[in-house]
Length: 91
Image 1 (spheres, rainbow, N blue to C red):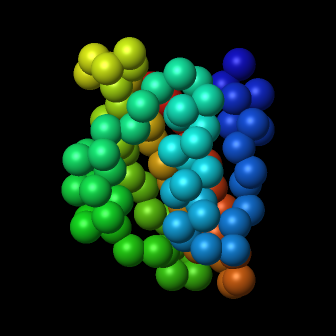
Image 2 (tube, rainbow, N blue to C red):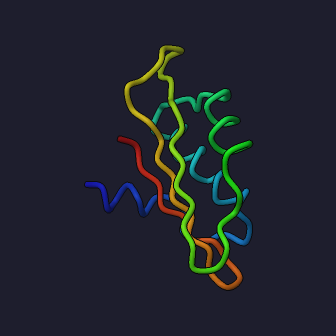
């Protein structure tokens, strides 16, 4: 179920980068590779860490066995006072 999958990822992170890294590792554990170009465009250039009370949502293209996948890694990072809350899923 989706809830069990979400629980496999560490939810709270001290940095935005740590949250993003955990989301990518989650996708890799599911047998996907994160498309580096898509990751750079959508995360590296396109997103800043969320301020307190705000959520950043990014989606990254995935490949599987070297071929483009129709599925994407969806990442949501919510800014808390001193931490970042990560929610991610593949769809």
